[in-house]
Image 1 (cartoon, one colour):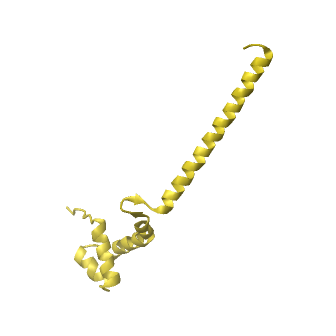
Image 2 (cartoon, rainbow, N blue to C red):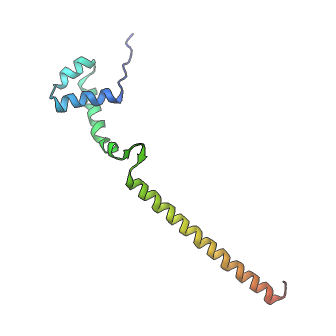
Image 3 (cartoon, helix red, strand yellow):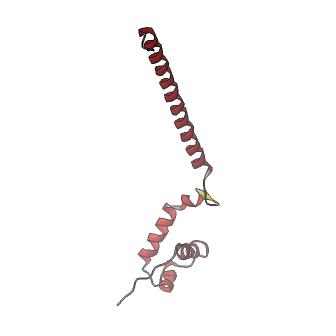
Length: 105
């Protein structure tokens, strides 16, 4: 029975780093890890496709760009809520004035 091997993200990056920086041939890395070259190239593709994620977070906090977007959204929602409260206040004033004019209060 052939069991499946699982490699951690750190192991995958280390293999890619060895190839790119130390110029170890892919065939040698694949022989050492017991994987097919196509598997190695899948790791490399995923690494390059998702490399930007390494720069989006620092110290466990979202990047400043994400913070700014979140803050902008919060401010927009707060402004919308203030406007809603203003409209409700105006409507209530008009309602009370109308009731007074009609003699219901």
